[in-house]
Image 1 (cartoon, rainbow, N blue to C red):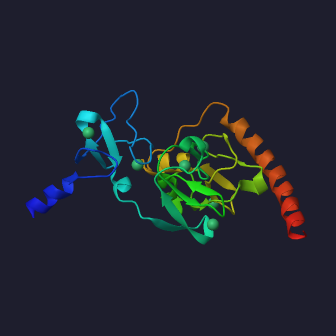
Image 2: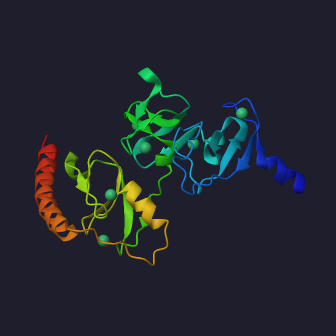
Length: 224
Ligand SMILES: [Zn+2]
Ligand SMILES: [Zn+2]
Ligand SMILES: [Zn+2]
Ligand SMILES: [Zn+2]
Ligand SMILES: [Zn+2]
Ligand SMILES: [Zn+2]
């Protein structure tokens, strides 16, 4: 029992010459958290990581043995294939989910032009957020026929990225805003920013226009 758990603590991985050891990142006031040698995304104290401390090399536990293929609601037709290097010039890709640049592992459907960070591919299909009474569903199509949305938490725009929403209420959140808050204790309500009342009224107005416009767009598309 002791031996097998010890074995699980050490890992030999193709991405690094030395054995890696199961460890934890401590992000108490550090300038910047280290990046994962696999997906090149940040490692935080919440992640399980394998580390080579002498090289300061880190690897998310999830990135140690990622599934070669996944099914994702963003692509109802095809499975997404795992790639360890982006198949593009400069070996970078633009993530379809968060619209950030990716430099490491990705999941891809070439036919649908979907390129997704492994971390973004693992976003839950549904989250419960303290700022809204209903469950929020992950939306992977562009909001309001490509017009984008305004996040009800940070009151910033989101355009061609995935987001969480409650459709009947017209409530939308950036994925990062939804995940950040839903992992905290849900007791505290988020502090309102100055002027958020005005922004909210603006948002309501904008939402009204967008809903009208996107309905027209959808109608046009339906009739094509
Ligand atoms: Zn990783
Ligand atoms: Zn090393
Ligand atoms: Zn992403
Ligand atoms: Zn596809
Ligand atoms: Zn936001
Ligand atoms: Zn709702």
